[in-house]
Length: 452
Image (cartoon, rainbow, N blue to C red):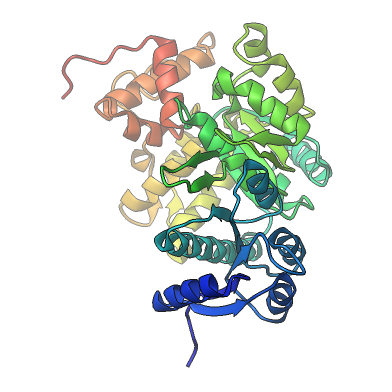
């Protein structure tokens, strides 16, 4: 029968205190081993597997920080909580710098020890689960593939493969839905970096909490317990930081991000300890960053920092030879072995469509068509391309019609079709709600007073 109890090593040289604390923790269901000096603590930690170690800062032979420093070099170290009788900021900084989970000052409440031990164990479990999941995902996903016969895009993908193994920052440009995230994942998978890929949607993290989201935070509870949360940048340590929609990053944090990337370190919000981090930056945008730099809405120094290598992805309307190839791929994906076929009129409609949402929109169109097709063949009428009056499909297009005008008319038609429900309209267009909101603003659309 396996023992699933949390294993705790208690290193405390005051025998009475050690007995009291050990009895309390055992009563809370922990499997506790007690030692009275630093040397025995280190030998026990190296000989056996513990989930959490409680180390007194002052002990004979080796102090708590010396044990912590030595044990962090072990292959699977426990989470360490330092206990000090004369707690100072210097002690806390030293302990955290060496990798302690947290520290507590005497006198302390037993309930606080119980809470910290359980949280430390939960962190260790999450790290283990994350390692397993990352390994499984790496094996399952492999390197993402971009389907194309378009020679310029094939050349671009060759460039992606060449630069993937470097640590140079990469800026991926292109309209919404062209595959920028896919390229970011290719860059990460083909790199030699051992850490994770962390996706930061710069358009989604806004408001007063944006710094805490990116850089993490530290705060002290009324009972003196220091709570810490790692930010997205810290979570990407050793891996790739993907700054999606980087043009939407709030200006007030652009400078702090620049310093973090250049120095490889930063302070958490409210923190006093500098966090060291090594990340490779891949950024993506559907806007012209150079123009934003010129008008002062994007920092020029951050622009040059993330733009060491520029990769531009073409819109789907410029690679029409890929439309049939991609449509067939999506049919197999959503239809499986019984996937329907495309009737000639459906293929003609796909090839003549403007595709303002690019590959993402084509994917959504094919998924819906597979679901609603009546019979084995998908007809043009099954494709959600012909929006009500005002759409591209039902409005005359001449040689002088601009792409911007096509996009404007199509977005307005889709909004009307979905009763101005921006979430459903954005999904149908294959763009984010944030991007749709911006386009509504840029094109000067006015929501009707009454809909229906």
